Image (cartoon, rainbow, N blue to C red; front, side, top):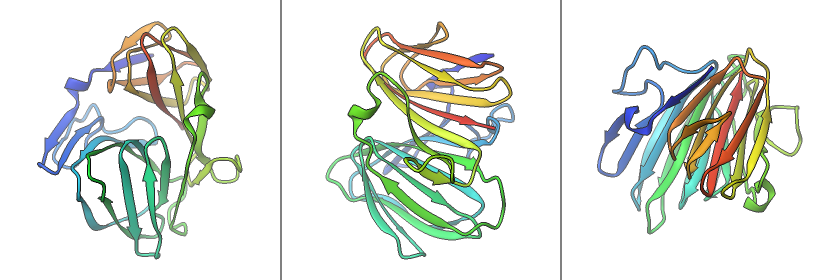
Length: 232
């Protein structure tokens, strides 16, 4: 099953400094048909104005993955971590037993990002934060795994969830393959560019919800950047 969820069907809230679009029920947006996708609980498409951001607030027992599309985001948390994540790079926060964090766009331009929440496999784990630069050249024409279950791959950012987060950049006419299992839940979004997924067309920022498939072919109709989560 492959379902295309058009961008204009998503939940939305514009707070001035934050223009947010919600693929799943979040904050003031509630749709009982879109409470999550397997262990994927949140996928927010955020535009954060320059010199603004989220003040300190708490989380627990959730794996929070941030993929920066343009600009940069600066993170601070109650564990003493601080870091700046730029376009094309990723940060992950394992909220575990509890953590407070703030996210600010300290740049002179708007920052756009996807923030993805994945339910943790185990409650009460130790909280943590990490980030990595991922050169865009390493994902040209084929998916690169950016984050995965701790211990599964030393080259990825570790998360406390049976999930993989991956990205690919494609030129028009190129395609990339993704292998999964029919019982898993895959959700993918093109940050830019029109694509097809096993022949079904999606525009930039549309959601593509997949289950019951064991192989996906993602083809670019125009130059595209695609983010994918494969979760239990």
